[in-house]
Length: 419
Image 1 (tube, rainbow, N blue to C red):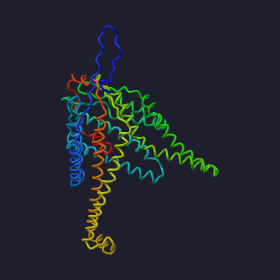
Image 2: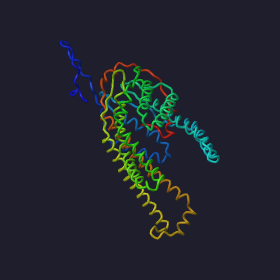
Image 3: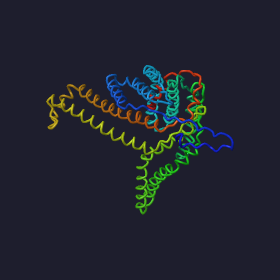
Image 4: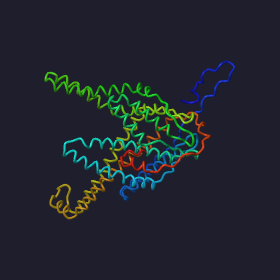
């Protein structure tokens, strides 16, 4: 959508035509090489700090993405710090470690008694994860500034968690059909508790629109699973039905293999639907993201990740082989006696070498993941978003309280922290 394509509604004769709404794209100043250097440097520092640098790396990533995003000619600003994230994580550990310990002990006892005593605790952990995600979003918003005015958020993390949990039960019972209504309910709660200065946000997208556009994908996924279950049941009931059962299973498996390739199209649909419902005092957004764009990005990420981790593994193997040769162990002949002597005498060297190799491979994969699924994903999303009537957000007064980083630490502990 652009200004040239906008057609205002017809006006009564003799009255001036209404001016079309002002439209502004989000300009992302892409500096991929600079971001890649930031990631490589962060991975190296993570290696020597035993992973603790990741809090400062997360902060650097957000500052880069925020500062390179221009809305109506002005860039956003991220004011959080790595120290805040570290402190929040340490406080979160004080909460999560006892919970994980209790969960572990109850799980062992439940298995011994062949009971389901750990199920309620597992449900509580799912509830707690939603609470952490809400509080983490609240922290990130209060560290986001545009035009000198900060975003902020209110509302109860526990109310959101129970809302998400209740809707997930309905989604499960409806075999996924209730997902659009769940998404709409959660977004309404989040957005109506989101503020830009003294301006309150809202969300008014209709869930049925989401359901209608995603109906074909949902039916396809449901049919694929039903074919596998039905084919298995048919094969088990009667030996004469094994041929038909095998055919149904085969068709269902083909459908289930295709489901992951449908996910980018579902995500693109969800982005467009979400954007249509966001409203900041008359300022709205429009997104024209397509599934093919996301599919290409995910495919590129998987190929590059496979190549990078493969090369890293080969380099580490070559280094290990060189060390073995220096120690007098031939890789070609594999002198088992010398290998056993090395393992019995210098076990710590092998353990340290294996740990170093594993961490190097994981960090290399992390660099690729962050580059494609954060930088490139962010660049793609921002390039497809248009701000409608950004001038409605001009006369805004600063307001709101700063949130602590505990929610971010909890989300990090559940591995659900966003960027």
